[in-house]
Image 1: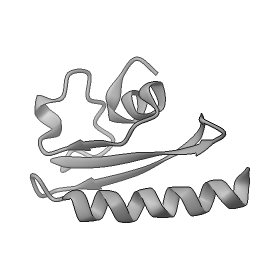
Image 2 (image 1 turned 135 degrees about the vertical axis):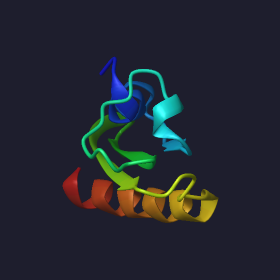
Image 3 (image 1 turned 135 degrees about the horizontal axis):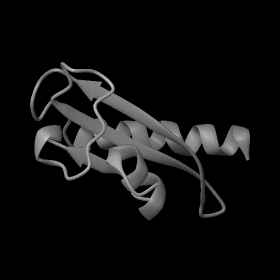
Length: 82
């Protein structure tokens, strides 16, 4: 949990929207073409039970609307999994 964007989302239980993954300390490249990333934790009673990880080859691909939509999806998943 101490590395990468997914680790940061899981460690802090907060969404991580990264415009340039190459500028993110400790970024773990799962795809060489990835340039931006959105990671949203799925929470059950405040505990992280999963993360939703989206990558894009475009810099700054994800905006607040994307983040809000994925956060709503995460809440729906949590209600079904928890």
